[in-house]
Image (cartoon, rainbow, N blue to C red; front, side, top):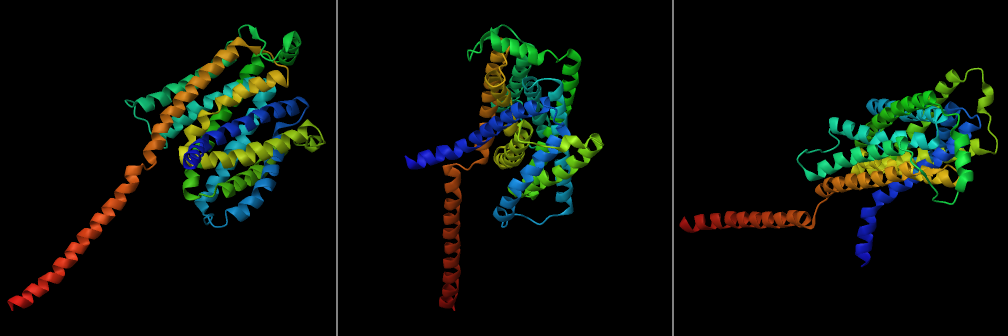
Length: 377
């Protein structure tokens, strides 16, 4: 019984890890939107976020990765520089800018094109196994399309209000006031920025998976990405906010909370978790759970920010969960194919024993042969 529970926990660890990561990202959306609404610069938020992540992760990386950290080469260093530019600088700045023009729920909805983009890119670079005639591959494709479709339903289909948490009419009016300034022009501008950021994030995921093959030290790689992300983000912030030095000031408010929380949870832990899970399950498995973030954001926004829940969001959430189940089921075939079964584990032992017996017989023949020759002589 104990062995069964331990085996179940080992199988569930990747699922628990990515769900925890999506809960953390959802909390970042809520806090970051509140900080941006108070006038915090998205460029400064990105710098502080990765500075905090570097301070938290670096000590663990120095000591825990001492035995597994390989030598830094020019190729690995260039990859780290590119990784630090793709996600910490391009993706996060465009994502926060898009959130500024829209809402937290809208940004979390648009970013759900990430699984489809990552799936296509992983397919192209052959990090993802796809056989069109295979039922599991068809499930992965259908599930990816369903998650994106569910996200679009949550975005475009409003429907009647659903009072899930007894927020009543007060929440509806607060939501109307909060979204009154979001025009169609701002929504389109924000959607384009977030979409470009998704392409950058997908490239980051693919390149991270490739880099981990030659630099299999997840904590050290996370620390390097956060460090160079801080440096490159600072350069971008100084250029974009030149002359406006007041944006760098912090006090004990939502701005500081957003910087610390997003740095520790969303940059430090998230980079590390997705690196560990990607080595086992691949980048598509990690990004397939990103639609959960939108569901969590929608629920948390209804409770914390008093945003009204609509029927379209509920229907979209159901579609997302169904698509996510298909992707996970399709990926389970890939995982099983790479995991040795009991027969596979016993087969080498059997072959080794047979080879030893064969070698023993050959030795006996070699010993008998000279004896026979002596008798003949």
